Structure formats: structure tokens, C-alpha cells
Image 1 (cartoon, rainbow, N blue to C red):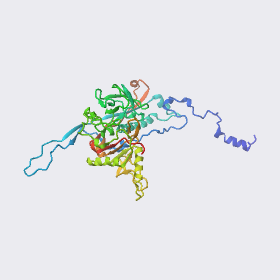
Image 2: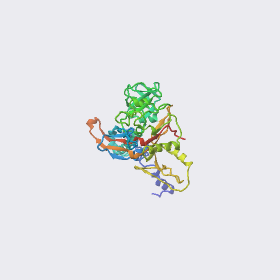
Image 3: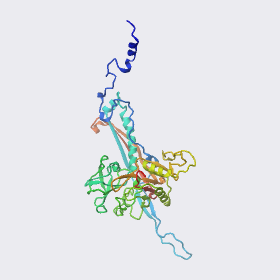
Image 4: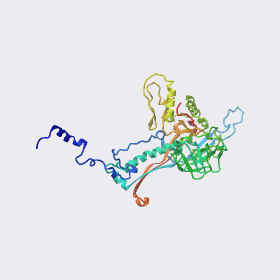
Length: 455
């Protein structure tokens, strides 16, 4: 047999690079072996690693101290010193009138947050084969853990009230991006725009479904909601939110001032967990809530300074400025005009288990304002204008010494393989946490709302 020519030798040596002796299809992944493609058990082109395309940051949850629940179901709040109990007394003068402090009670009970996942026994097996994602139960367990903490973070930052853009006898519509603020099991109170009053006949309508695509929130029962009516959280199925803590007696709706009748009709009940309401003129945090009657406005340093001042006048010391990324950049632009180039260094501040963004190398520490750490969180609630337009995120100035996430039961994992109980060949997993956010001093927490997204 004669030796092959150089061209034949090169052609044979490169055969494996461009073709196969077994045929063009033999070495390819057979995508038609895919099992249950809707769940993505098989990846016909790439490897097993599943990359996240979702924002799983939980910065506010990480920044608030977490404590053991303890042997308590609530506490008492002293809200008044007593009238005329202290005064100067002359040598033969009469003593001050005997009076007592005003004591309010707050009941705090734990809430349960649950996250479930599951996989069929067939998908558990086939996911290990060529083209599969690997251990599908471990994958979903990891994802469920991220989703579980994200749900808690979203509940902690859910807004207390919303303006509706449409409604019916058993539903109302809010901006779709804000619909996730309502949770199944929440109860809402309705502000009737036409009557300029809160409806009390059916206070506490229960949310039965939420469509985050259309913004429709369905209620079990209720009177007719109309465009421009208000829906305020009357009580929550999930954890208390930061907006509940700093809510004022009368909620801002449409273009008017806070409606004082809501206090008379039960008040903001979300944080006063006795559901007795914050009575008007008694214990409320209205001086710490800066709104603009549903009209967007630009962030100013005066607004931020006033919030800090109010907290200090009430005996607190701000420990954290919480805002959305839009207000972070607005604040950066405000501070840039006042930069003083006295040094160059990068600086970060730790808040809980989170750290602020580093300050830029301009001599101005952008990670703090007046020494208070600034923490952006994508879940910070936004205000809604009178025309149903979603405005920028709110800003919260907080004294976190009086805030905590009390844990009654740490996150538990339960796995179930009882096919008869499920009536299906599936493996199910459950994560649940029992706890609640508690604030022992609402007067040293502040909120700035009705801000534009860009200044």
C-alpha cells in the first residue's frame, strides 16, 4: 500500500475536528429524550449550572438586628408624662396635681412565612442523566431558600396604603409593579373618594388573590371600589412592614390632606397590633412622616435634615438611611455640588451584615450622610401619585436601636415523600419561619414620601 499524499494525510488528521466516522448525529445530545421540558430538567446545549436572573438581595433584612423572641407577647408604651405633675413650688405653695402617665399596650404575636417546592420522582431521576441539571431537589432547595428570605424582605418593605386606578365589588386595581405589596390573607380598609370618608360597614376585606401582571387585587367580599379610592392595609397576614411602623393616623390619598376620620374609625391598624388604632392626638408618628399630598417632588437636603432633626428631638439618634437606588443617585448628585477635596480615600460602613456602597475618591464620603450609613435596597416601597403614576422610592431615616426582627422559630426545612398523602409520585419540600418585626419606639423612625424618581 502506497503512502498517502500530504493533502490526504492532513485531511484524515482533521477529520475528528469537523466530522465523525459514526455519522453527523451520533455525538450530539438527543434533545428528544427530554423529560418534562416545562420545568427545565434538561438543558440540551449547555452545562448543569443554573444562573440567577433575579434580584435576590435582602439588604434591609440583613441590616436589622435579629433576636430570640423571648417570653413576651407584647409590651406597654408610655406616651404621656401626665398633665401638670411637675412644676416649681414656693415655700408655702401647693403641690402639683397628681396625675399618671398615659400607657398604651401593644400586642405582638409571631407571623409565619412559608415557601414550598417539589419535584416528581421521574424528574429527580432523569435530572441526573446527560443534559440534566443534576440534583434537582438540591437545586430547588437552594432557590427556595433565596426566595424565602426575599419574601420576608419584601414583606418588611411593603407599603401601607395605595391609590386604586379601577375597581369592582370584589376587586380593585393598583399599578402592576406595586401589586405584590398585597398578600393573600391581608385585610384592607377602603377610602371612598366620592364620599371623602372611610367606609366602616365592611372594614377589613380579606385579599383572596393578587395578579402581579395586571395589578388586580381580588377580595373575598366588599363594596365597590372606584378609580381614585384608597386601599389601606388594615391588618397583615405576613410580617409588619416598615411603612406600618411610621404610618400616621390619617393616610395621605389623592391630593388632599390626611383624613382624620380614619383614626376615629380604627386608625392605622397594621402596627398597633391590638387593632385598637392609634387615636388622633394620642400616640402617633405623624410629625415624622413627610408627604406631599400625592404630588411628586424632588429630594432636597432640607427634607433629609428635617427627618434627622425630628428623630433627635424625639430622643433618638439615626443609625440608618434606607432608600431605593433612584434616591441614592439623587442624593449623590445633591452632594456632588458641595464636594470639598480634603483627602482621597474609599470608605464603607457596616450595617448589620451588610455594607454600604464605597465612597468615591473625591474626599466626600458618599456612603454616609452626616455620619449616618446610607443603604440602598431595591425593595424599598415607592409612592403613588394622585394620577396613579408610580413615583420614586421613599426614604426612611431609622434608629435601629429600637427595631428588631424577633424570631420565634428559626427557619425550618421539612421534606415529605408520602406519595399516598400527596396522591402523586412527588417529593415536596417546605421552608417556614416564625417571627415578626418589632419596633419599641415609633417616634424615632421617619419617612419621606412623594419623591420623584429623578431630580
